[in-house]
Length: 114
Figure 1 (cartoon, rainbow, N blue to C red):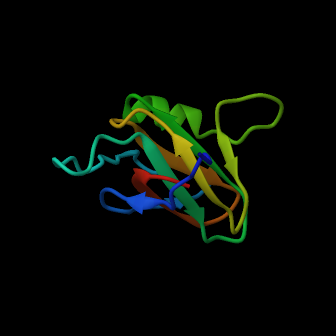
Figure 2 (cartoon, rainbow, N blue to C red):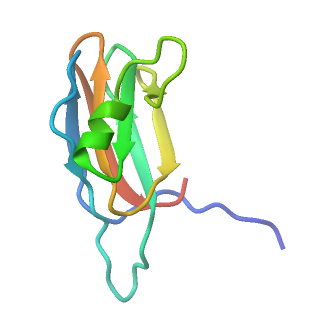
């Protein structure tokens, strides 16, 4: 039997993060749990901006803001290039924010699949 990957299935509200040189207040993005939708720890991140954003994720809002720093040599910010659509695994109670060289919009949606 072939190993199958399911298409991404949203499982909660999409949150808009407007990144700038200073990280905005981090948002906790909680998946929706029901009897037919098991807990998920996947998040789809879409960068609709024209610059690279540095995604900060953490167990608290403060950690997410610290992790959103632009990476120059090493750091915890996850670069999301302009136009990228990425799916990541994070704990289901994570907080999210981002920084960018200029204004940039990211959409973050909890769910499952690729």
